[in-house]
Length: 347
Image 1 (cartoon, rainbow, N blue to C red):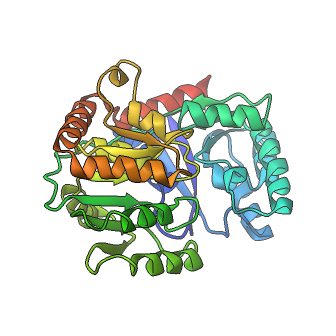
Image 2: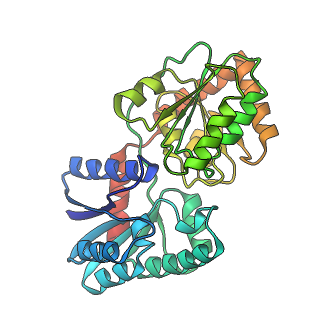
């Protein structure tokens, strides 16, 4: 099958969405499909006129077009134009634009209109979790959504560290809520641990500076800011990690969770988000011991209790690690995700 994959060309640093795109493209090619990648520069999801025209031109051709939602949802007229021109446009919603809690009211309303227009015009739509698909249906009644969960690469089991190494892997932004982790750990400074914060600090420089200020309230050497890491540098850090902390206020799935589980690393994830699906997996996999904990991201008292229990109880650490190691055997490969996407496109 021939597929055109349209992706944003100038996003600040790596993200879950860009990783998903790259992994699916590679998986489609491994399955023998011909994939043409068209990278469109622009200030997505706030494109200029030239960006919108470039997107429409990239999609205006017969056949299957897979386009990243950060672009399609912001430029519905490009989706309409491509579909009217005979293209089959599939929109991959990594996260709705309206899910950003930092938006002002006027921009929130504008994104809501553009999202709905693009989703209704699209030939097909996919999300990365059942939670995010339900979110789309609730916000935009009448939209049909399929689910193509992220896959996961095979990885070796992490060896961990002494003292225990904690990891937060996400762009430094209020949405990812790293400040809660730092405030909680400030109250646990009498217990041995180290924390690595990995993620771009250019998404919200003011928030990043606030995180650095909070880190200075902790004992020297406890917190390390690593910036955005990929490749072997990230693999090395994963290998030394004992627990992943994800405290986002909103999360459609959280691929970092399955990346941790692939290495036998447990995770603390935010309740009421798609991250719970990533931690639990299929119902049969969730029947035993949980490979971590589910915590209200707005309740720092609960988060502190959970982290303190893990840090001070060898029994809890062993149980979580054993459950995470078991979950390694249930994770789906990226070829499964690619095949699932094609099923949705061809329905």
